[in-house]
Each structure stands twice: as structure tokens, then as C-alpha cells.
Amino acid sequence: MQGKDRKRRVRILVKAFPQPSAKHEETVCCAGVTEDGRELLRLYPVRYRRLSKSDQFDRYDLVEMTTTKASSDTRPESYRVDEGSIRLIQHGGISEEAKIRLWRPFVAPSIGILIEDNKTSGRSLGIIRPQLENIKFIVKEAKDSNTEDQKIADLIFHEQASLLEDPLKPLEKPKHSFSYHFTCADPTRCTCAKHPHTHQIHDWEVQATYFNYKRKYKTEEETLVKMQQAYQENIPIRNLHFIMGTMASHPKTFIVIGLLRSGMNPEELSKQRELF
Image (spheres, rainbow, N blue to C red):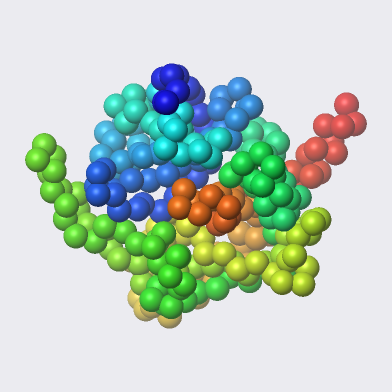
């Protein structure tokens, strides 16, 4: 039985990589925090490239939409979105401190804790902080990524015409997969102290960055050097956090669906708040 329709306002945290859909052509799964700050939600299916330009949203934008809790996805944070109801209310406009206050309540000590929560409550979304000293950005040929990652990262590369809509311009096929090898900053009840995690990054941002660099720089070698500089050297020192989520087909397995970073340290911000 489906839940009742509900109009919500959500601050978007991430748009995951587009995925092919026989029914919906091409969809994007998003994650965001409700305006009241109480819920971290998974929102789908969003045909992002079919939205009007005025309603296409970015990270931290405030978006209004009608959602329904459907029985087809038992993960508690998952809600179906009425595409026609999506309205961009505010583009950005919040401070670094406000951004951290938005997502910090959903930070878990480790992936091990998320896995425990998943077993007891079904939790399928959360945020963790990797240990800065043990993080490594990995680039592979897309064909060399594991089978499950290939399925997740596979886009629609051919035109799939609709009877009512012009076909979307096919997206360029990714040549590389990008991953992080890391341990959790707090490895509480996690195996990563002995067996570090390696997760492919499914944030749309990383592939978009690659294609932007590819247009900007002359060679593939230079493009990948710039990717390493950005994701190995520059981004981790900006208090990098990972948004972790499970897949509908594998509701017990967490993957990196998004990257968060800030010039402010969330832990220091929390300590400052405790003083007052």
C-alpha cells in the first residue's frame, strides 16, 4: 500500500550518477535534508535532464516537491517524487555554518555503525568522515571496475525516444571510474582498521569534473593529474565527508553516493556550540 502524497521542501545534498531506466528513460537519485532538519531522504526517480531549466537544482538548493512513500522500496528514507511537482525555491543562499548544521546530525562514527543500524532499523542513508591520513584517490579504466560498480555507473548511451518527447542527447560514456580507498576517521565497531574500505564514487560531480577538465586541458594525462590534485590533495583537507547509501537491489550494502566538504571543521563547530 502506498503512503499519502506529501508536499516537502528539501535541501539537496547530492545528485547521484544517472542510471538507465526502461520505464523512465534516464533517472537520477538524489539525497537531501528536509527543511526542518529532521529527515535525510532518498528521492527518486528524478528525470533531471527533463526538468525545466528554471527548476534544475544543485547542491544546497531548496526544492519543493510532492513525495510518496511507496511499498516497492522498503528502505525507510526512500520516497518517490512527482516530477511535475518539482519547484526550485531557493538557489543556495546559506552559510558554511548552516550547511554543516544541515547534515551533521546524520554523521555516523563509521561504516560499521551504519551497517549495525541497517540491521536493527533498516537505516540506509548516513554520512561518515574518512581519516585524512589514510585516504587515497584511485583512478581506473571504467572496464576494470567491478561488475556491480559497472552496473551502477552505466548510463544510457543510446537515444531512447519517447512518443511525446524528443530524445535526450546521449551522455558521453565514462572512460574512468573514480574511487576512494580509506579508513573511517573513527573506526568504532568497524573492520576498516585492518581492512580499509574501497568505494567507487557515484556522485555525479566527479564525472562532471572529469569532463570539464577534459575540455579545459590538452591531454588525458594532464586531465588525470588535475583530477588527482583536486580529489587527493585539495578536497580531503576541506573536512571531506562521504554520504553513504545502500542500493535497492542490495539494501544491506553501502556505497559512496556523494561528497561533502567545508572550510569549517564540523567537530570544532560542535564544540563551539557546546560552550554557549
